[in-house]
Amino acid sequence: MYSNMAKKQTNHWLILILVALAQFMVVLDISIVNVALPSIQRTFSMSQTSLQWIVTIYTLAFGGFLLLGGRAADLFGRRKIFLGGVVLFTIASLGSGVSQSGGMIILFRAMQGLAGAFMSPAALSIILVTYKEGHERNVALSVWGAVAAGGAAVGVLAGGILTQYLNWRWNFFVNLPVGIFVIITALRILDRHESTLEHNNLDLPGAVLGTGGLMMLVYALVKAPTHGWTAHSTLLYFAISAAALAGFIINEKRAKHPLMPLHIFKIRNLSGADSLMFFMTAGMFSVFFFTTLYLQQVLGFTPVKTGFSFLVIPAIIGITATNIPRLIQKIGYKPILVVAPLIVSSGLFWLSHIPVDGTFWGNVAPGMMVMALGMGATFVSVTIAATSGVPHHESGLASGILNTAQQIGGATGLAVLTGIAVSASTKYIANLHLQAAPTHHQIAAATVQGFHDGYLIASCFAATASLIGLLVIKNQKVKADPSHGEAAVPV
Image (cartoon, rainbow, N blue to C red; front, top):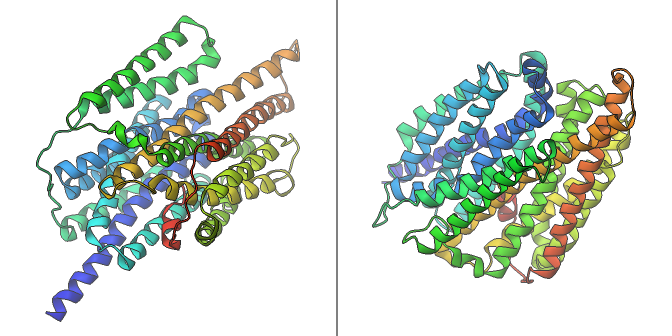
């Protein structure tokens, strides 16, 4: 009997390692590709507007299908959905690595994001049903959060090493052995986790309308700076998006088993926290995109040097996220959700003044460090705010909505800020009234001018998040567990 109990306990921790490894792949692929972007751009001669879709399409597909992925795990079995997601993710990683055009890699990145949206909630559900509520589950969720933070950090560094010493394609090939290992091991040790619900009605109309509407919205935002904000094509894209999202809301009101029950938004802190998260990530995703391009294209950093430069962000986030729950316990989360986004805004404002002939430690690192300090405090606090007052049986839904707001906010913000940056760079060159092709220094100056405008608007997004924290969030002192905070570290 003791032997069986010990074996079961051992299997529990093997399951944790397995699902954490799968989550590591998902998080890794959010950040690993950033350092490789300049190399991919040169390989396929992609424009900066097209290039950002390599990042945007992954996060958009991931965020757009998160609710559907979580619901599918409940309806059809966690093990089945988890394995299906890992298989698709591994195949899509291979496809990204062997891509022969910019369009091809964007397509496979969309497949990776879709697979991740099914893997991640299914993996988290497996943890929640495997570990008893209390200390055991808190330890498991702490590991889950640490993997999320570590994945982001390792992604930037690994991306630099693989891009510089092998090839950018290895940023995707690295997933193949990990994916195969996870599939084989999962088949051996995971329980069936069949559905216990009385129905298997999946809200496919809601999934199609919601995801389609959001994708069309981002596409419209990407194309608007080039086509013009009042161009017929731009207005058509926005109209299609509005119609799809309106249809989504109508469907959710009428559906017997909606993908996202709208009554949950009556909880004030959940609505406020989701809105705050949307604006925060809308501003912060620009840091990884713009700063990567600035370090490599303007300052001439190698991919590896760029990767090491970014380690300052997850290091500070990890320290802050680990210690902030004790402060929340004393003063509640509202004061932090007012102040911390302003700290992020300050860091972004600093970055909006980077010069053409700048240095990393003098011009870039201070802004990144200040921003990371605010990020760590914000993401822990907003997670607690988003789940306070939520009925227990809807806690998973609340977490899914928060993650969706994070991913969609990042994708939408990156689309808007990239469009603003490209427009500003183009205008800068036009104002020079050149008679010949611009010099390398003039191109660099135009690029940096675009980054200035992008960072500045990103700073305004973070300030808007602070305003939401002030006007919408209701304070409530909570007994926070440090492991809870770690689980909220952003990916």
